[in-house]
Image (cartoon, rainbow, N blue to C red; front, side, top):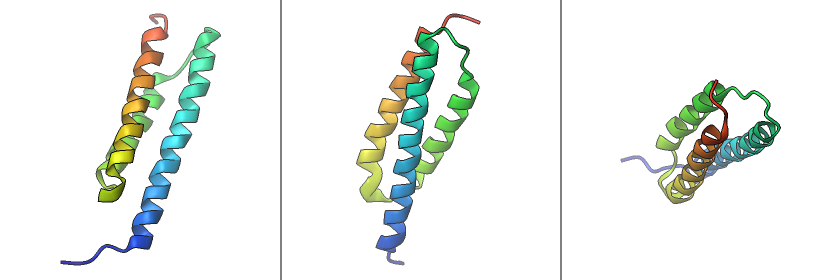
Length: 88
């Protein structure tokens, strides 16, 4: 059994958390645009959420609890955004 490289795991975790933070910011902007009745491409947001979820599957074990909580919050924010949009 090979031992995990703590430095590599820390970099992987930091990269994933940075991507989650970027998505949080993107959803905040999307929410503001929706509040102004501007059009939003949910397909792009859904695709990025899919990539984040896939990356989370490979997250180091120690990062899983924090990543799970952050992803759950993102999914809820995306669901709220979707619910607040007028039908196309």
